[in-house]
Image 1 (spheres, rainbow, N blue to C red):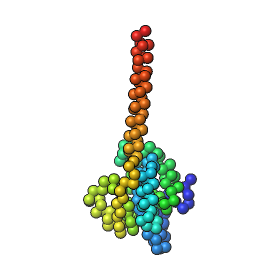
Image 2: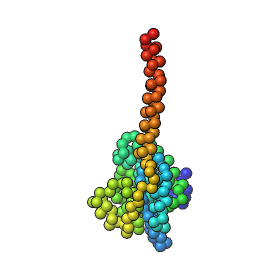
Image 3: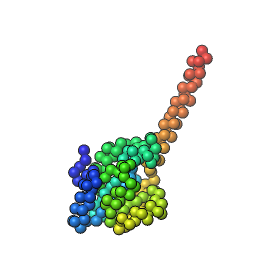
Image 4: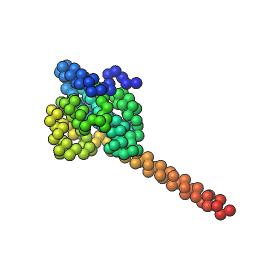
Length: 182
């Protein structure tokens, strides 16, 4: 399922991975997200993030964490599938599952990255930014890498589905009325 090069790590494995990477003199970049319905913006973001250091660690939000933040109808793609898809990306060296049990900065504190990559589309308050800054040598904020987003894709599916339903209703209601009148 998951390639050996791109691992899903628990806390201890992550700390060991970070220590070995640093012993080899390599720099570490860290980013995280939901990665629900992977799209070209995600791919470009991950590729750009990987250019910021020798090794890229990616945090992936658990299903429960996404539901808590984005609502009961999310995620669309279950965490095991999202993690497996991420594991196939050559730009990612390690993956860590972020759960609701973790405080919001746990992964950053565990890794203490040379470079933390955050998206400009994620709203980080000045207070949160200051809190995470002390665990990172450098923070790089990336612009959106595409015009699309997962939320936009979901909205499009809903709109298209509603249009299709409306068209069918317009077609079928006269037939139903005819049957009721006769």
